[in-house]
Length: 464
Image 1 (tube, helix red, strand yellow):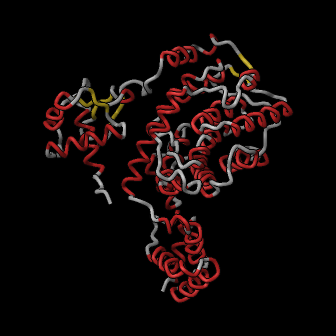
Image 2: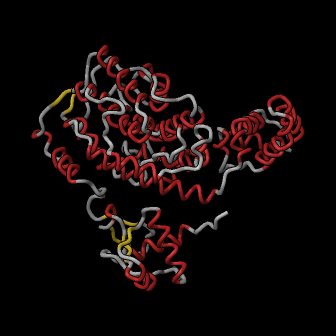
Image 3: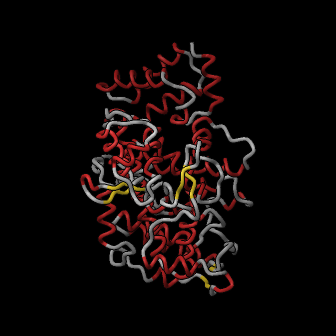
């Protein structure tokens, strides 16, 4: 298994590089580095950070100069603080077309022309003939997301990085909605079920809803897709306990909605909403390229606004459907600035222009690919046995804890479950795996088995 590099060491390298806004050579960076590293070690750390897209490099060999990428190249170090603080607005590198859209949607709202839903925008799209992503972009993303799991069952890749994906996507998608939970607070909520004191209860609910929706996508990877069952249930899970009308969860809207901060007015007639919703699903389902399919969903689901609320959240998770199905790197919107996401979405709403949202999508996917490639390397090659029996192992562990079994009862239960559900040649290994999983249970990993902290604590009292 590859040696894990301490995060503090990588952070120290980033802080050192930040002191050279125009780029620094290896010697320059080493000279200001708080944690002294041998030159070759420092070179390897810099190469890793470039691969993960935390740094960019210009030049070659001894002429190489490293610096922070565009999104944080205005950053400065706060003395005594282990973080970067941005001067001005964080944004992403964008194309000239994206810049035009950005300037247009930044105009005062009174200077922008009110518009309604343009059905021709959807009707003009022809699956596998029309493309929002150029051939070069699609090829670039495929090369970045290449996975050795392509021939394995749907969802194999996502299951390998599930713990990290669950936190990343829940936090980032919630953050893009204005949620104020930090990454560590999100991790504690998802793993231990502990909400942060002083925070709005709706924020915790939003994050927990993301967890449930992501679990649906991964656990039912072979069944979900661009169909009514998947999208309606995604909405039901993401909107649970957040809508004024509980019956609106998982249902297409029958009332008008208004969107703050835009001159766009969505459709109001329920029959037309229904027709367009089905058209969006049918079109998305017919798209062969997974990257084009994902981006199409991010464009047209929010634009239609088929639900009373939570439309963008549905689109962000729906965009992961083709990636999970085809064992490609998931998209978790790592580091995406909220303002860049909003501007790109407004470009679709008000101008039917996709270029700025496309810039954001491509940049975000590149960051996600780097994140999960590093996670996979740290995990090593997955055990095929564990992949095959993952659901049965998790179910057995969950039943043992929820049932309050002691060691004698658990031993008998595991053997009985193996005899009922597992082929003869795999039973001994299955018993060993489940027993090991139960012995290794702790507060930090019980979410893997969909257990609540209270269940775990009660069970621990009986585990003798």
